[in-house]
Length: 396
Image: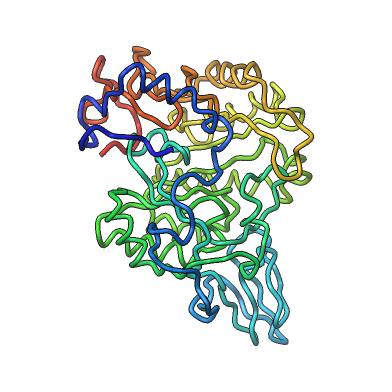
């Protein structure tokens, strides 16, 4: 759902667009809000948002990839993500979108956009980054993990030839974001790490016209490309699938330690960071896991990193499980609060009080939310208007 706005709002003004009671009740009642976080909302592919028909030639999407090493016998070793795939000539890496051709590694998805939508920034979710604004959101095919609960598996778990795509070079995306009054571009839906080169080129083009970039990622990336990425983008949200190596091995087909290392690197480099933890019943919903996660965030990242506990809905390979009980989400939040984290949210439960941002000192609401809509913003110069406590984030 696109948040309706009543005129322009300066990013750091005292009051955001004010919605009446009827608007809030309507927003809270929308059934899609609870179930489609991460699903495609907005403008469909090949509509005026891109202004072009699906591409007919693959050649325009192919560029030499970054971060790989040449090996004997025309093999290459990918250095983009922790899998470090060793790939024979004419073969692809695990992600399915990077191919060895004669000992040179190529990305097959540069400018190869599958979905493109205009979303509220809260849908990503980013709660401390330009609240109430819109993000021009896009993705290519492919992913470097295989989460059994993936909501967008139709594009993340396929090869680029298997889905229709539109040719959308970086400058075009930057221009479309401007035209649609989106102060940020979001690289989301699938896994932006696998379309790394396109993401970086688009972020640079966007910066040239005053548009920012945010990344929605699983954080499965090596340190060198991650450091380079932070020089081009403005915020990173990491989907931390669980605080358990067992879960990562059995449900994600990855390793937790690499994601934790990425989060530490992101914070050390001063990049604005938020974390989403999708709570999956029976698989990652234990109290000890919640407590361990909260303690790790406090010790290694700091108490001001927002943590979103999000409700699971049956998807992909986990349709046998029920949606997350509200009581479980509230228990997770209570545990994280007790461990001292300042900004703990409950997601995919529109209308819940834990969607809003509260000042950690006076407990007044500083950003009011219902689903993807933002009400009053009680911030002035990045501080709580009531008690002047600084509220970390990107507000202007």
